[in-house]
Image 1 (cartoon, rainbow, N blue to C red):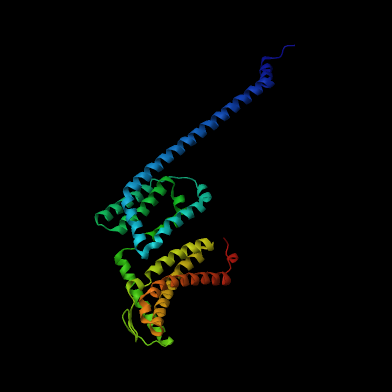
Image 2: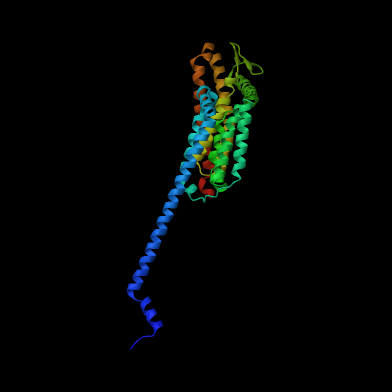
Length: 322
């Protein structure tokens, strides 16, 4: 008996040979779509790498002299020698957070062009006015603009800490540096002149000069503690990031580094006064005076560690939700 045409068509469509052919066609389409997406991804990645290479080359050409001068200042000026650690630590933070950053959707924003243009304007002003601080700071603004332009604001917010930490690698302007240094000289000399009489050393203070019976001690700019203050603040931020997950404790350690640095430097001046009074005045200007700064900095680091341990004892980490 002959089947109707419609039933024949349905039978032919449901036959094993027809189903196998359809499966092969679907598999070929899937493979073709997968290969197409793969080649699109490879093409996009190659384009991104090319853009990154072009931007890196232009940035090196534009900021090469500025970076070279900045590194030279880190090398020759002990007040800013901590600058070597700043970009290394920022890179380490980005590497540590690479998995979380990879999950952030890429949403480029044209508003990054405004930041980029502003950074370049700051660079031009800095170059025209021979203002190193502006030229160096413009690097960070340009970097922020590039992040927003190519990755989006979500990635910028995720990178805000390592990007903001880079500010510490830029030496502060001389006019601000001098405004900080002199008050520190007066504060350290006042503290030393207050404590030394308790230890049996008569003193008479005139500004930043402490007059002892054997010789006067001049709390010079190099002895103001600005070097230990900036270095200790940098190390306090690094220490807080590595040793504690609570942002509130990290901020507290960074803020506490300021009075710790001042107190440690005052101990240096007091120790020098005791050295002059009870041992040999010549030792105050020799090897012991030079090595005393490193010793006091180690004491400041120990004080920072003890403060953190006290915070963990009073406020255990488990009490705060991560």
